[in-house]
Image 1 (cartoon, rainbow, N blue to C red):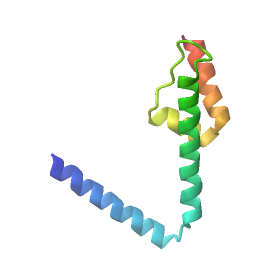
Image 2: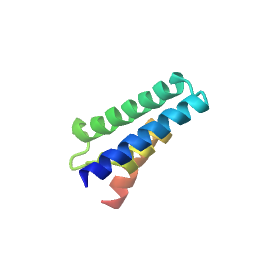
Image 3: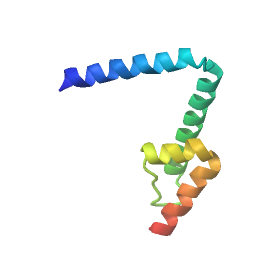
Image 4: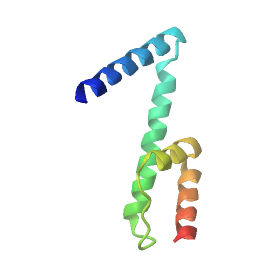
Length: 87
């Protein structure tokens, strides 16, 4: 099973490299995307560990990260509001 996963990882890395070279995507785009991921993760960690609202915990998973990356800080605030409404 590990061999299959390693082969899939290798193939996907090769396809990613091919796409980057073919469409000439700049590293600037990737650095902005990485920056957005870092900002979203820091914002979610700040909400989780600030202690301003006791018992509030936003899980760090692909869905919450995607919301934070696509919508930024308002997306994290949206997650907080949704979590407070659902609780």
